[in-house]
Length: 228
Image (spheres, rainbow, N blue to C red):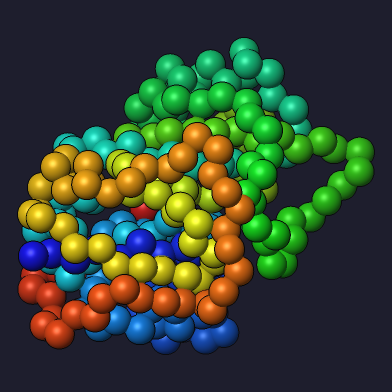
């Protein structure tokens, strides 16, 4: 039975297990052995990272053919209008490719949001705006390139949901393990509770915790898959 770790990756943590001073790595948060990331998250981004001990499940989660939705909270510099967001909904050219249409709306700052350490740069004369954005792809720094392309640079980026796996009440650096009935993400992730419409603020606690431990090492796990 494959297992999956849900981790709330803090800002500044590199999404790898090998040491990379002066940055923290996954090894500083996750004590379970035999897991590798199913996708990545930039060092300067925060939120949900999935890790698995099953190579087939890792591939199915990261394979773009499955189109698993990934939902983000994005704080941008400036005050975009609904019209400004149309290029993101229609697909926009960034660098050498066109993005797939994204779901995006202007939103209030999440009530459950934790303070970032260090805080973002604040300028009194320039407003900031929160967006709720869903992608079904994940190229390197894609969301940052997308918002910059329409004139509203990303200041803070938090991934809170992949499929129906979500952060729930995990605080930065916390994680937990779930056992899955099989290696099909379309069926397996349906067993995991999704993000509530009005999530409660994450509870404070120890920097990491686990429900299960894994005795056997993974097989055929990919170590270098890049995502936003």
